[in-house]
Image (cartoon, rainbow, N blue to C red; front, side, top):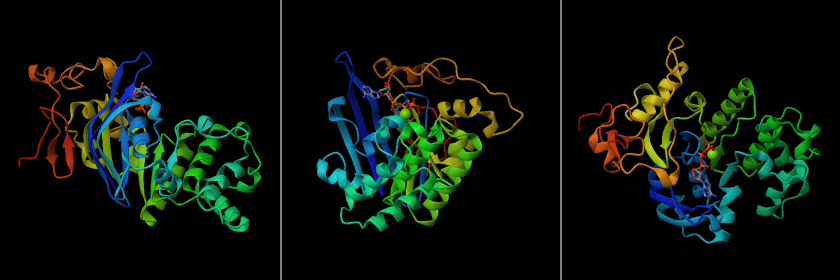
Length: 325
Ligand SMILES: Nc1ncnc2c1ncn2[C@@H]1O[C@H](COP(=O)(O)OP(=O)(O)OP(=O)(O)O)[C@@H](O)[C@H]1O
Ligand SMILES: [Mg+2]
């Protein structure tokens, strides 16, 4: 369904500098699968999601290399009219910040129905209403008709997030990209909502890219995991395998920082240091400055991605383990 091949992206910094925000990312997503994308704030998760849906404003982009192919469409060279057809109908996007993605002057009903008419102008009013109500119910609104005439500022943070989810679901797209979709919702609801989304994905053979810096949530919903650090995909593979025995020291440190993933009794070990800015990355491995296992070679050049086992990759010179080929 989605294939990303050696994709790199440079954005324009505010002072005219070129910022390498994604470096040589290769990923694949099959139909019916949920891919979890993890990484610290600023690691490039949203920029990747926006690149897949071709949503980055062209004024912000300095250059792009590699390939992003969605259902056979080359997303980097497609015309804007083609991309507009894909967005909404085939790719539903749940944005991180609902307040910036919603129109403050439109009611909940109008925001959602607008998407329906934009793609299917001949839809009857009754059909459109049905779609809107279904989407709201799927997004977790218990009594959607009570909120149809509410404006975004009249909804709670959690409801705005659910409204965003309904907007993404209304055309029943094959791929849903959810960028931290549930941070404004309390924990119990979060799990409930994600479980529902996950069930729909499975039943209807849709796919989802789920972005979060909560590895616990990712573990609960995704079958595949991609771990980002400073614009590099440092490890990818089956969620269970990667979290059980990480091959990249960064993934191992992330897991150690969240001990409830493994055992209630372990104490969290925070990762010392901070993520480098895109223009201040080390010359070698992006994690070399913070890595407990870094050797001299690690500081010299970016490692290539290597296979740990079939379907499992890590971008590390000295992975913590590797299946003998
Ligand atoms: N429009 C832009 N112009 C220039 N730099 C940008 C732009 N958008 C993002 N960046 C930079 O790209 C890098 C990756 O940002 P991104 O928003 O993808 O991080 P993230 O992993 O989604 O973080 P968070 O968890 O906080 O949402 C950051 O260094 C950010 O400052
Ligand atoms: Mg983000």
